[in-house]
Length: 278
Image (cartoon, rainbow, N blue to C red):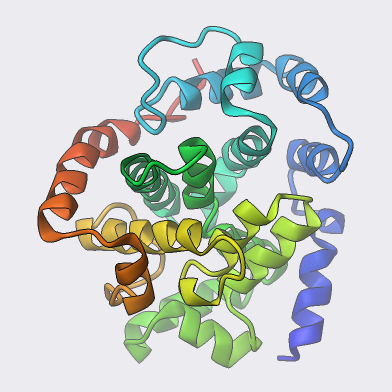
Protein backbone atom coordinates (compact mmCIF):
# COMPACT_ATOMS: atom_id res chain seq x y z
CA UNK A 1 0.00 0.00 0.00
CA UNK A 2 1.26 3.48 -0.91
CA UNK A 3 2.37 5.58 2.10
CA UNK A 4 0.91 8.78 0.64
CA UNK A 5 -2.49 7.09 0.22
CA UNK A 6 -2.38 5.95 3.84
CA UNK A 7 -1.48 9.45 5.08
CA UNK A 8 -4.15 11.07 2.88
CA UNK A 9 -6.85 8.78 4.29
CA UNK A 10 -5.67 9.35 7.86
CA UNK A 11 -5.68 13.13 7.42
CA UNK A 12 -9.32 12.99 6.27
CA UNK A 13 -10.30 10.99 9.36
CA UNK A 14 -12.97 13.49 10.47
CA UNK A 15 -14.83 12.95 7.21
CA UNK A 16 -15.27 9.20 7.79
CA UNK A 17 -18.90 8.31 8.56
CA UNK A 18 -17.81 5.77 11.20
CA UNK A 19 -16.36 8.51 13.43
CA UNK A 20 -18.71 9.27 16.38
CA UNK A 21 -20.26 12.75 16.24
CA UNK A 22 -18.98 13.69 19.71
CA UNK A 23 -15.42 12.92 18.61
CA UNK A 24 -15.88 15.07 15.49
CA UNK A 25 -16.89 17.97 17.75
CA UNK A 26 -13.93 17.39 20.06
CA UNK A 27 -11.48 17.27 17.16
CA UNK A 28 -12.84 20.55 15.79
CA UNK A 29 -12.23 22.13 19.20
CA UNK A 30 -8.71 20.84 19.81
CA UNK A 31 -7.70 21.66 16.23
CA UNK A 32 -8.49 25.32 16.88
CA UNK A 33 -5.11 26.98 17.63
CA UNK A 34 -6.90 29.78 19.50
CA UNK A 35 -9.02 27.53 21.73
CA UNK A 36 -9.04 28.60 25.39
CA UNK A 37 -9.47 26.67 28.64
CA UNK A 38 -12.78 28.48 29.13
CA UNK A 39 -14.13 27.29 25.77
CA UNK A 40 -13.10 23.69 26.50
CA UNK A 41 -14.64 23.91 30.00
CA UNK A 42 -17.93 25.17 28.53
CA UNK A 43 -17.92 22.38 25.95
CA UNK A 44 -17.22 19.65 28.52
CA UNK A 45 -19.79 20.91 31.05
CA UNK A 46 -22.47 20.96 28.34
CA UNK A 47 -22.14 17.16 28.05
CA UNK A 48 -22.90 15.21 31.28
CA UNK A 49 -21.17 12.03 30.06
CA UNK A 50 -18.02 13.90 29.11
CA UNK A 51 -18.07 15.76 32.44
CA UNK A 52 -18.35 12.48 34.36
CA UNK A 53 -15.48 10.94 32.40
CA UNK A 54 -13.14 13.90 32.80
CA UNK A 55 -13.79 14.02 36.56
CA UNK A 56 -13.39 10.24 36.90
CA UNK A 57 -10.07 10.36 35.10
CA UNK A 58 -8.68 13.34 37.01
CA UNK A 59 -9.69 11.80 40.35
CA UNK A 60 -8.42 8.37 39.34
CA UNK A 61 -5.13 6.68 40.34
CA UNK A 62 -3.78 7.67 36.91
CA UNK A 63 -3.07 11.16 38.26
CA UNK A 64 -2.85 10.55 41.99
CA UNK A 65 -4.13 13.97 43.09
CA UNK A 66 -4.54 13.81 46.87
CA UNK A 67 -7.89 15.65 47.02
CA UNK A 68 -11.14 15.08 45.20
CA UNK A 69 -11.60 17.44 42.24
CA UNK A 70 -15.28 18.20 42.07
CA UNK A 71 -15.54 20.59 39.11
CA UNK A 72 -14.41 20.58 35.51
CA UNK A 73 -13.02 24.13 35.83
CA UNK A 74 -10.84 23.02 38.78
CA UNK A 75 -9.55 20.07 36.74
CA UNK A 76 -8.76 22.34 33.81
CA UNK A 77 -6.73 24.79 35.92
CA UNK A 78 -4.71 21.99 37.59
CA UNK A 79 -3.85 20.18 34.36
CA UNK A 80 -3.32 23.10 31.98
CA UNK A 81 -4.41 23.53 28.36
CA UNK A 82 -2.16 20.97 26.63
CA UNK A 83 -2.88 18.17 29.11
CA UNK A 84 -6.60 18.98 29.02
CA UNK A 85 -6.71 18.73 25.21
CA UNK A 86 -4.97 15.36 25.40
CA UNK A 87 -7.20 14.14 28.23
CA UNK A 88 -10.31 15.23 26.33
CA UNK A 89 -9.18 13.21 23.33
CA UNK A 90 -8.23 10.25 25.55
CA UNK A 91 -11.60 9.96 27.28
CA UNK A 92 -13.47 10.48 24.00
CA UNK A 93 -11.71 7.61 22.20
CA UNK A 94 -12.41 5.21 25.08
CA UNK A 95 -15.07 3.22 23.18
CA UNK A 96 -13.01 3.30 19.99
CA UNK A 97 -10.05 1.85 21.88
CA UNK A 98 -12.25 -0.92 23.27
CA UNK A 99 -13.67 -1.70 19.85
CA UNK A 100 -10.39 -1.50 17.97
CA UNK A 101 -8.50 -3.79 20.33
CA UNK A 102 -9.77 -5.35 23.55
CA UNK A 103 -7.27 -4.41 26.23
CA UNK A 104 -5.83 -1.32 24.47
CA UNK A 105 -7.49 1.08 26.93
CA UNK A 106 -6.02 -0.77 29.93
CA UNK A 107 -2.61 -0.85 28.23
CA UNK A 108 -2.82 2.90 27.60
CA UNK A 109 -3.88 3.69 31.19
CA UNK A 110 -1.01 1.64 32.60
CA UNK A 111 1.48 3.39 30.30
CA UNK A 112 0.10 6.75 31.50
CA UNK A 113 0.58 5.70 35.15
CA UNK A 114 4.16 4.53 34.62
CA UNK A 115 4.92 7.74 32.66
CA UNK A 116 3.64 9.97 35.47
CA UNK A 117 5.61 8.07 38.12
CA UNK A 118 8.88 8.13 36.14
CA UNK A 119 8.43 11.79 35.17
CA UNK A 120 7.83 12.73 38.83
CA UNK A 121 10.90 10.75 39.97
CA UNK A 122 12.99 12.51 37.34
CA UNK A 123 11.71 15.93 38.48
CA UNK A 124 10.27 16.68 35.05
CA UNK A 125 8.06 19.70 34.49
CA UNK A 126 4.37 18.84 34.00
CA UNK A 127 4.40 15.08 34.75
CA UNK A 128 0.65 15.11 33.98
CA UNK A 129 1.42 16.21 30.44
CA UNK A 130 3.96 13.39 30.00
CA UNK A 131 1.32 11.04 31.40
CA UNK A 132 -1.04 12.20 28.62
CA UNK A 133 1.71 11.23 26.15
CA UNK A 134 1.55 7.75 27.68
CA UNK A 135 -2.25 7.67 27.49
CA UNK A 136 -2.23 8.62 23.79
CA UNK A 137 0.95 6.84 22.64
CA UNK A 138 -1.06 4.21 20.72
CA UNK A 139 -3.66 6.62 19.27
CA UNK A 140 -2.28 5.72 15.82
CA UNK A 141 -3.68 2.19 16.24
CA UNK A 142 -7.15 3.62 16.80
CA UNK A 143 -6.78 5.88 13.75
CA UNK A 144 -5.61 2.96 11.58
CA UNK A 145 -8.55 0.87 12.80
CA UNK A 146 -11.00 3.64 11.80
CA UNK A 147 -9.31 4.38 8.46
CA UNK A 148 -8.67 0.73 7.49
CA UNK A 149 -11.37 -1.19 9.35
CA UNK A 150 -11.11 -4.19 7.00
CA UNK A 151 -7.33 -4.53 6.86
CA UNK A 152 -5.90 -3.37 10.17
CA UNK A 153 -7.53 -5.96 12.48
CA UNK A 154 -6.18 -8.70 10.15
CA UNK A 155 -2.75 -7.12 10.44
CA UNK A 156 -2.98 -7.30 14.25
CA UNK A 157 -3.99 -10.98 14.04
CA UNK A 158 -1.00 -11.68 11.78
CA UNK A 159 1.39 -10.78 14.65
CA UNK A 160 0.69 -14.21 16.16
CA UNK A 161 1.57 -15.99 12.90
CA UNK A 162 4.58 -13.87 11.94
CA UNK A 163 5.87 -13.70 15.53
CA UNK A 164 7.20 -10.19 15.02
CA UNK A 165 6.45 -6.74 16.38
CA UNK A 166 3.26 -5.04 15.21
CA UNK A 167 5.06 -1.83 14.22
CA UNK A 168 7.39 -3.83 11.95
CA UNK A 169 4.42 -5.55 10.28
CA UNK A 170 2.69 -2.16 9.86
CA UNK A 171 5.81 -0.76 8.18
CA UNK A 172 5.88 -3.73 5.83
CA UNK A 173 2.19 -3.40 4.90
CA UNK A 174 1.47 0.35 5.07
CA UNK A 175 4.99 1.72 4.71
CA UNK A 176 4.35 3.62 7.97
CA UNK A 177 3.81 2.69 11.62
CA UNK A 178 1.08 3.49 14.16
CA UNK A 179 3.54 5.70 16.07
CA UNK A 180 4.26 7.77 12.94
CA UNK A 181 0.53 7.99 12.22
CA UNK A 182 0.00 9.10 15.83
CA UNK A 183 2.58 11.84 15.32
CA UNK A 184 0.87 13.02 12.12
CA UNK A 185 -2.58 13.32 13.68
CA UNK A 186 -1.21 14.86 16.90
CA UNK A 187 0.40 17.59 14.78
CA UNK A 188 -2.83 18.01 12.80
CA UNK A 189 -4.70 18.45 16.10
CA UNK A 190 -2.32 21.23 17.13
CA UNK A 191 -0.80 19.36 20.05
CA UNK A 192 2.51 20.81 21.24
CA UNK A 193 5.80 19.17 20.22
CA UNK A 194 6.14 18.03 23.84
CA UNK A 195 3.20 15.66 23.19
CA UNK A 196 3.82 14.95 19.51
CA UNK A 197 7.36 13.60 19.94
CA UNK A 198 6.62 11.03 22.70
CA UNK A 199 3.70 9.72 20.62
CA UNK A 200 5.67 9.65 17.36
CA UNK A 201 8.89 8.25 18.80
CA UNK A 202 7.72 5.93 21.57
CA UNK A 203 9.45 3.05 19.76
CA UNK A 204 12.51 5.10 18.73
CA UNK A 205 13.11 7.78 21.38
CA UNK A 206 16.59 8.48 20.01
CA UNK A 207 14.97 10.15 16.96
CA UNK A 208 13.14 12.80 18.99
CA UNK A 209 14.57 16.22 18.18
CA UNK A 210 13.65 18.33 21.19
CA UNK A 211 11.84 16.26 23.82
CA UNK A 212 14.02 13.17 23.99
CA UNK A 213 13.57 12.62 27.73
CA UNK A 214 9.77 12.74 27.43
CA UNK A 215 9.93 10.29 24.49
CA UNK A 216 12.26 8.02 26.48
CA UNK A 217 9.85 8.02 29.45
CA UNK A 218 6.88 7.01 27.27
CA UNK A 219 9.09 4.43 25.50
CA UNK A 220 10.08 2.84 28.83
CA UNK A 221 6.54 3.11 30.25
CA UNK A 222 5.13 1.24 27.24
CA UNK A 223 7.72 -1.54 27.71
CA UNK A 224 7.11 -1.76 31.48
CA UNK A 225 3.38 -2.13 30.77
CA UNK A 226 4.09 -4.93 28.29
CA UNK A 227 6.42 -6.59 30.82
CA UNK A 228 3.76 -6.26 33.55
CA UNK A 229 1.20 -7.84 31.18
CA UNK A 230 -1.44 -5.12 31.53
CA UNK A 231 -4.11 -5.05 28.82
CA UNK A 232 -3.26 -5.80 25.21
CA UNK A 233 -1.64 -3.61 22.56
CA UNK A 234 -1.33 -6.12 19.72
CA UNK A 235 2.18 -7.15 20.73
CA UNK A 236 3.09 -10.69 21.82
CA UNK A 237 6.71 -9.93 22.75
CA UNK A 238 8.30 -7.40 25.09
CA UNK A 239 10.86 -5.31 23.17
CA UNK A 240 14.25 -4.29 24.56
CA UNK A 241 14.58 -0.84 26.07
CA UNK A 242 16.64 1.23 23.65
CA UNK A 243 20.16 1.89 25.05
CA UNK A 244 19.60 5.61 24.40
CA UNK A 245 16.61 5.61 26.78
CA UNK A 246 18.51 3.63 29.43
CA UNK A 247 21.38 6.09 29.33
CA UNK A 248 19.16 9.17 29.29
CA UNK A 249 16.90 8.09 32.17
CA UNK A 250 19.72 6.48 34.16
CA UNK A 251 17.51 4.22 36.32
CA UNK A 252 19.10 1.47 38.38
CA UNK A 253 17.53 -1.88 39.29
CA UNK A 254 16.29 -0.68 42.69
CA UNK A 255 14.64 2.38 41.15
CA UNK A 256 12.89 0.20 38.57
CA UNK A 257 11.59 -2.12 41.29
CA UNK A 258 10.38 0.93 43.25
CA UNK A 259 8.59 2.21 40.14
CA UNK A 260 6.87 -1.17 39.68
CA UNK A 261 5.78 -1.17 43.35
CA UNK A 262 4.50 2.40 43.17
CA UNK A 263 2.54 1.63 39.99
CA UNK A 264 1.01 -1.60 41.32
CA UNK A 265 -1.96 -0.18 43.20
CA UNK A 266 -2.87 2.53 40.63
CA UNK A 267 -2.70 -0.04 37.81
CA UNK A 268 -4.88 -2.56 39.66
CA UNK A 269 -7.53 0.00 40.56
CA UNK A 270 -7.53 2.05 37.33
CA UNK A 271 -9.20 -0.69 35.28
CA UNK A 272 -12.59 0.33 36.65
CA UNK A 273 -12.48 3.77 35.02
CA UNK A 274 -15.42 4.24 32.59
CA UNK A 275 -16.94 0.79 33.17
CA UNK A 276 -20.08 2.82 33.79
CA UNK A 277 -20.94 6.49 33.48
CA UNK A 278 -23.02 6.63 36.61
